[in-house]
Image 1 (tube, helix red, strand yellow):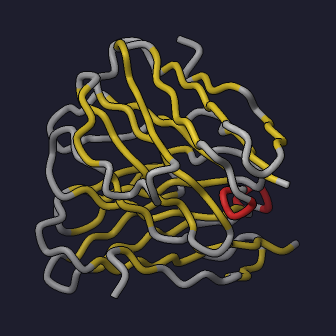
Image 2: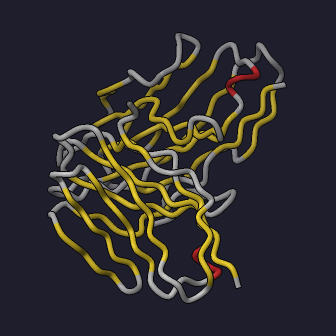
Amino acid sequence: QKEVEQNSGPLSVPEGAIASLNCTYSDRGSQSFFWYRQYSGKSPELIMFIYSNGDKEDGRFTAQLNKASQYVSLLIRDSQPSDSATYLCAVNRAGTASKLTFGTGTRLQVTL
Amino acid sequence: DAGVIQSPRHEVTEMGQEVTLRCKPISGHNSLFWYRQTMMRGLELLIYFNNNVPIDDSGMPEDRFSAKMPNASFSTLKIQPSEPRDSAVYFCASSAPRGLNTEAFFGQGTRLTVV
């Protein structure tokens, strides 16, 4: 079992719709959870992180965490063509100076 | 700050040659990570340093790979000898953990092609 699992996609949504990206993790000791966006040929960049159960909202983005189910999701409201990218989920076991473990990413395509 | 700086951006080399990738982390960041990204395996952590000390090198694929961090502002990843299966994008990232926020900032990557 992979430590962090994501559906590779592509996930195709029409412009203006809600995109829902999902991630599961195997280590119950994981404490911090991150969503990165990576455009083709570019480096990953952080969208948001979450460490408490529930929802965290930042603009059009909402991260959801359910530690009991070991599940993290990212919702993108009012999807735009510029949101088309690969979204990487990452988890961190401890809060200090420890490694981020990444999923393989979900490719999102927002269609006109 | 200019962010994490990697060089070279692109490297094409022949099988058997030595390759050295370089990284300058963000000033003040005390953790540095080397990742490798391929289509098949995604983003894999090779090694990470904390305060210039290697903490976990379990991701280093084999003895052909080595990494050093002689000071807080410089790190290298060396492959000797290189093989075609080493072709990938290599990212360096740095972070300054604050509580549960351990966001890593990535460099632009080095695209390595071994022919």
